[in-house]
Structures are given as structure tokens and as C-alpha cells.
Length: 112
Image (cartoon, rainbow, N blue to C red; front, side, top):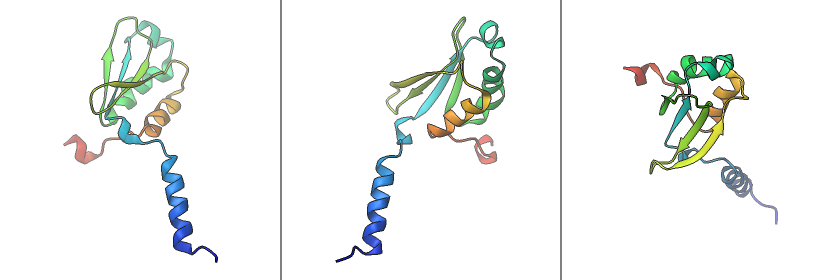
């Protein structure tokens, strides 16, 4: 007996959703970095931090003197889940990383 379309659809849906990285693991994020000396040698990362990062929801920048740029991801219990270096990434890769981790850009409604 051939499986019905509904059964095939359910199996495909169950398989694909079980392999998607759950964005609910990350409640908020923080980028830690120095503001100048190290960051000045990383123009793409610097532009990402100061121009793009403020446009995302649930992400903040924290200045730490002499720190290399890192993205810290936290769960809903404020526990650090993941820490990723940003130094080797381009501006576009930094933005894609945030999106791949489930972070969204602010809308006009968010800014009011």
C-alpha cells in the first residue's frame, strides 16, 4: 500500500524540523570587544559592531579593554551557551551569523 501525501508530508516536516537549529536556545546575545586598537585593525568587524549591531533585537555591545571581538550567546536562564570569535569574519559574515542564530533586526515598531 502506497503512503498517502499527508503521511509523506508529515514525515518530511518532522525530519526537517528536527534538524533545524532551535533558535529558542538563545534568549539574548552580547558582543564583547575593545573599542579601538584591536578593532581598528578589523574594519569589517568594527563597522558591524557600531553600525549593524544596534539594529538587532536582544543584542548588546559591551566594551572590554583589550578584548578580542566575540559573540556570546545566552539562554533564558542567563547562562552562557556559546562563545564565537568574530575577528576572522567579514561584516556580511557577522550579520549572517546573527541571523543564523535566530536574531532579528528591529522594525520601526520596535524602535518606538
